Length: 539
Image 1: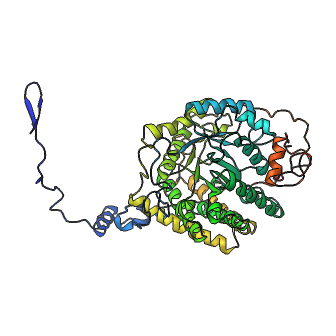
Image 2: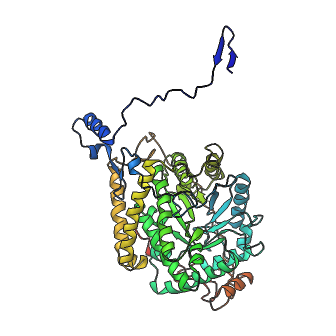
Image 3: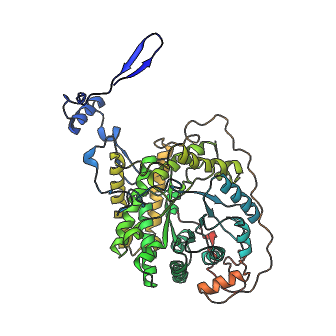
């Protein structure tokens, strides 16, 4: 039969293709890479192939100009299968392929609650909370009632809450767990934000305090394994390396070494290998380099799966659970709307790379204004990725792309070599305290700055395509911290039970004051001392 279409003046007939339709690819010689290379060399007219067509990452990994089937390491496997390169799930959750995660830093708890409820109504599905008793670097939460005010009206049985790695983790974890207890904790998801290793490195804290911090982290990990298995206790904030200017390989090595350190502590504290692995999540940063961002997430999962399986974990416990935040180091105060281009690109890489939580920073973040409009646009970037880019419908869209597969393999190998360097130096803490980590990051940061200054790396609206006469927009002063109330007496010794009881009894956190940079639940040494940020950050 034929399909006939009346075309007005004439009649058009379409007949189905015959099974004997000739293959138009026949009759041509099978192309060889050497043939392409010969043509490329001819076109270059004597110019260096390596210098002209090959680009290298900050880790020294060659990119391009052409990848073929011979470059596919064939190590990715299938989605949901070890080593989870192609994702941690065997099937795509078409309803919620990842959590649209909004971050909150405004000082006033009531203002934060208004923003949270507005964002949840607009499509946000998870919350990333920055908490600070002084209200200077996050929401001014000092008591359990303050945190309840922040989360008023939020159904924690379906909305995961992630605590950003900050000082006073144990106290804030006790408050969040107290909020969880109004729901079925076996189904609650989220993260308690313990990061004593990263915080010690970042703030130059007293190493003598670290064993107690790790003990408290392990205690909460034990509690979560028994009561709320969907809640991760420790978070490896390897974004610390990224934001300081480090390379992708060093960031992944930092993540692997940090995760390995927590894993050993948890197992020594009595958790099984699977419980220890399930207590850890990772926070990575992605910039506007899409192929490298995708490869970073895929390589990270491969490395972590190898580590955990070698230490006795198996099955889904070896899967790396990842939160991605769009890079802060690429955010511009000048021409802030260009930040939307960069964050959208980074979010696409996070989607294609298989992150579980994605936070798109608002375009005005570098200005410190935190406008509702900026949060709405940040949220809508991910909604567009899910609905219009069809992120709900495709699992591992980069899978099988030779360039991505090769970049993933090369990055995994480079990161693994750096991870081994860290371990040979005695682990992450010793590598940092010896100065090696800081020196390595500094060298990589300086190389990146040189690339920007020489034009090898461009920032739209900052170093290229700068609008003439561009001025900083008017900024809005952040919300002032609320007045300090009188401290409330507390428990005197640490245990998870004591912390939970103290939080429910109305214990109050005291921010640092002049001459006392270490606040605790007043008036006793109830929680982890506040880091003295005056010592500065690791470069």
